[in-house]
Length: 93
Image (cartoon, rainbow, N blue to C red; front, side):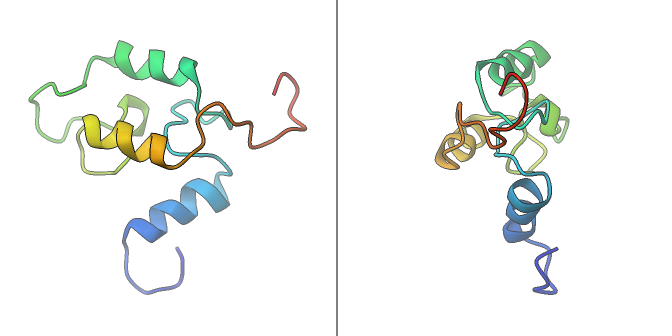
């Protein structure tokens, strides 16, 4: 996606930030990573569930390794988008 001819984390960054216009952690893709997203992922019940490769973006797997664990939470918070509205023109944004 970033024209490097290699599929890697930079491609995921490009997809999340440049194409989707959001941040890691934005489970429902509403343009915000906030407490609503955290509620959704913990309701999914896949945090450290010991089932291999069963998690998706909507379940909290934000580093694309198939699992929802502390690494995903770290990735999302390091991205710096928690409670930042990436589209200030959006109604209720």
